[in-house]
Each structure stands twice: as structure tokens, then as C-alpha cells.
Image 1 (cartoon, rainbow, N blue to C red):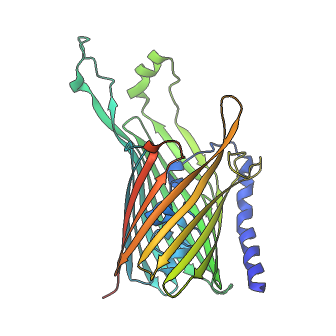
Image 2 (cartoon, helix red, strand yellow; image 1 turned 90 degrees about the vertical axis):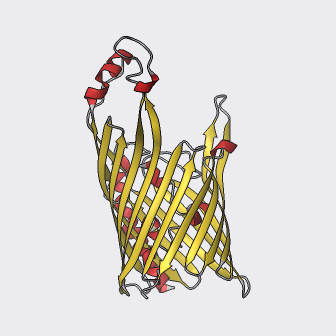
Image 3 (cartoon, rainbow, N blue to C red; image 1 turned 30 degrees about the vertical axis):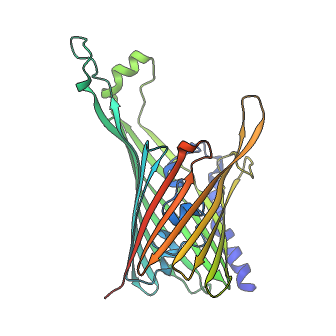
Length: 360
């Protein structure tokens, strides 16, 4: 029990630095493409992963979980079409141990809307309509994540990890941004309980935007819009606290229940617990396993209080469902997720495949 209180004290010590950013006047929703989540297993469990991530995707969710990988190499690929195919969301991850106490990982995340028509040259010099002059561009967000995880001795069973992130965002030739940030994570197991903490953007992630105003000056002038200046966008820190519990239902069946709570410090949000200082967004995931080869998953998250035009309020939630099957050293996962619980058109089918390769 003493070790438990030491762990809680340690979590509190880590979370305190994030509160100081709460007074910073910055956008609430910066780099939000990293809030979607990666891996079909994770999405099927409503992203409740901070305490249970134990494979290559831990490089994204909580780098401390990379230490649970037992194979020499592990890699995963994921693809999803979001919002009825308007956007493509892709992920690739790789992890390998350096020694028994140290693991490294690398992840790439891309969210993009491709083939956007550029109609600036739709009319030629003679004023005639020429569809052959239409060009196409992409609006894409990239994240390159370098992960490091290591076991420590000052608290038994404690695993620590850190991410260094490079963010690159582009809007065709019109604008681009580069950003850098750090994440810190921790995990520990206490009997059948698992605890995890992830501090995202702990130092603030800074995106420096540059705009190619020469390409858009005429259009902005004609439409009465303000020509944008080069700007600096800051992503405020966010703390995610996770707790999970394992059950052996029988010799063949297992159950994993996981709860994550996202703490944000940028003012009130439309989440179950909201205040000017901190807002808390919970999400819950379940995973039923059969002999370690087949899995059934479900989860609830993105709980929001919506105010209608007539002043009435309603609560919405995002439900998720998933399946997984392991064939030797290959695991295939599927998730069905409803982005925001708004319409059938927003259901997304997510597939990911993970392979473990031993040294031999």
C-alpha cells in the first residue's frame, strides 16, 4: 500500500507543471489531428490506452509501454478513411529494444484532405471558362514521433518514457508550419491494476506558420479578407490519467477494463467536468479476450454537452466497436467508430496490422 501512495505522489508531482499554462491565451484546438488516436485496437476501446498500451502503438499513447514488447522488432500500419472518405488518416510505427531496460520507437501520423480543387485559374486570360486550368492540392498534417522508454529502480515496476515530436502542416503551396514538442509518460502495475500517466506537449508545442501571401494577395483583396501574417501557434499541455483492471473470467476468457481521463487547462470545454481551471473528459474501453487469439472490444468516449439554437441542451457520446485476431506473430485489428455520433455518413472503418519479428 505504501508503494501505491508513492506512485500517486509521483503522478501529482508530474502533473503540477501543466497547470501554469492555464492562463496562456492560445487556441483550444491546436494539432487536434493527434487527438484522433492510432491503432484499431485503441480506437475500438475509445482511446482508453494510457495505462494499457503495451505494443508498438505505445510510442503514440504512452512511450513507457514500449517496455512490454517482448519481440526483437515490432511494426504496425493503419489506414482509415474519415468523414465519408473526405479525409485519409494513416499511421506507421516501429519499435525495438536496445537492452532489457531500454526501448526505442518511431511513429509517423498523417491526416490529409487530398485533391482539393484550386480554381484560381479557372478563367483564362480571355475570360473563358477552362476546366483544364483547375489544379489540385492537399491540406495535410504530419507528426514524426521519436520515442524512448526505460525502466527505473527508485519505484519498483515503474516504467518511464518520453517522446520528441516534430510537427509539419501544409496547405498546398499557400502555407506551411513546423513545430516541436515533448511528451512524458509513466506506467506501473499493482497486482491486477495498471496505472498510467501521459503528459502531452509538456513544454508546449510550438507551430511556426509561414504564409505565401503572393499566391493569395489578389484573391484576399477581392474578397475583402485580411492577408494573414506569419504566426506562432502554441499547443497547451494536456494530462491523461489512466487506470485499468484485468480479470481472468475462466481458463479461456479474459476481460480488460480501462478508463482514461483527459485533463485540459485551457478553460471550459463541453465535457462532463468543466471549469475555468481544468476540464476532465473521461473515456472507457473494454476488451474481451479468448485464449489470446481473438478479441472483442467496445468503448464510449467524446461525451459532450450540446446546446441547441432554442437553448435546450443534450448529451452526445461517441460509441466504438472493434475486433481483433492474432495469427502467430501477426495481429489484425478492426474498429468501427462514429465520429461525433452525428450521422451514419460519419461512421469510419479502421484497419491495422501489427507484426512481431523475433531476433532469429
